[in-house]
Length: 118
Image (spheres, rainbow, N blue to C red):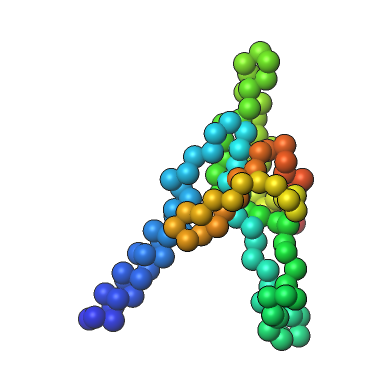
């Protein structure tokens, strides 16, 4: 049916958009992250205006470079891996837009820490 084809094409488009980051390969000790979205509702269920939302300093890692080389030419392994939720600095990083999705690029040493799931 037409509705079925429309749903299928919409799901294919959303998969293509959500996979746009896979074409970006960070170099050296850089990583591609996407900031976590701020809550749009309060704990009581009230919708929050943009001015009331706090900027979140946490992000999900989507791509990781090979690592930086030391003076001997040995690769220093990265501290983060794809899928980690990390704490990022409030300022810094390079913003990049891939198919209408916003991402940030940071160096491994700029990442403040990793938030581990319990």
